[in-house]
Length: 286
Image (cartoon, rainbow, N blue to C red; front, side, top):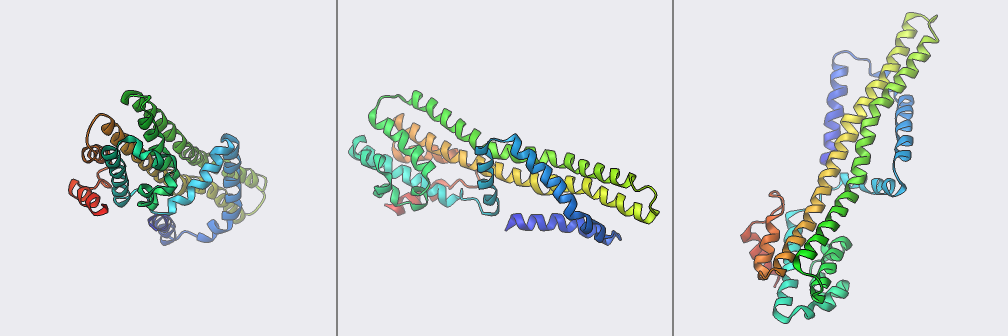
């Protein structure tokens, strides 16, 4: 909703002021379809050439998420920390082997199914269970697991930012394609030099619409979209860092309550629950 409202305000102010100052919106509307095909067609073709199929697929999958509110809320992080607490508490009370079945079959686990939003997020479940499995087997120490976690989080970061970077490159290309459309319009105008000034004026105005649209689409539509998706990608990485910090604290000997406090501290302040909120939530889930 905020995205749509933002676009409405941006475009409304731009075109509203133009009309208010006596601009002829009809000139823009008449040139709009042809200029859009030239600019967007050229840009999307170049976009397809510049990116691998996996990036194109990831970008198409990511764009609709911009219209949805972020799933990385305080409530989600409360559930995540409570889940980690439950797992670590069970392991501390009954031994690491007691969580083996939860790790091997998380979808049938009572621990994971207490938190359905997390249980259906395969990235989170896989990240947690992979490292719990290593903790159960005891083949790696905390430093080795930390290095492995960092490598996986870096990979996740790179994958999450590939479509964002692709959108950024698209935004950067749009003004250039707007210039291409304008130059083609000028060429067309120069081929009609014998026409009356009123006709030539209209043709030049249509050509300039191309430059205008290229800049408008880049900086009022596509680049803000890329910025929003970049922020959401950072939120996803922060979730993995929270899991990492909590599990490592547990491996270093801290009790579950203290371990989840380590995890809580790495969250952004806007989504981070307070100590009391987390404590009450954990107690309420018992």
